[in-house]
Image (cartoon, rainbow, N blue to C red; front, side):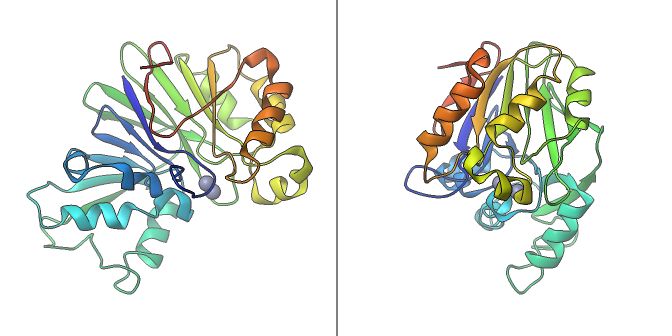
Length: 260
Ligand SMILES: [Zn+2]
Ligand SMILES: [Zn+2]
């Protein structure tokens, strides 16, 4: 299984877009600003988008992706997200004010996008892949995802802070080869981190101990400013995990978690 990182930063700067991953060219996980690194031809290959939550850094480029596809022969893009996320998209983006209602355009019968509601624990099938909706804890209702096939799997925390449910769910699923966890803040910003419901290194360490095994660990959602400082702290706190920075522009083969 091929995992291409289009963006995975906590903010934007040159070469550092916000969260968007592409699995085997057709399945997108989140649609942040990283989407703009795709060519038009690559956008045409996207069939399905699973969204973690409604925050702008995870959905900002869904409207632009759809806008590129609306006049093509592309079939309806299937978006899967929690009820809260779907309602937020309808009310605040596809509302004919911020952006056209692409759920009814160009025609009601063959719209550009269909918004499907999922709930925690749902298992979706796309080709050879299964996608499990994971419970996580953030400032708005948020889903993580376990994505795997017969050979390999990875899991992504979305945006997350301390909880038990995610770890219980992961312990009850086939082990992942690659675990992608978000960490936006340093311990210096512990109070902001707790307010924003994001992990900081000590909290992440505490929660990782709840997992029954040790997959390769990758860190996403690092801040644009002080990225190196936060990663240095993570490497120290999680030294036994040997965490790697998830890198935008890289293609990972999930089976071995090595960069190609
Ligand atoms: Zn968020
Ligand atoms: Zn985020």
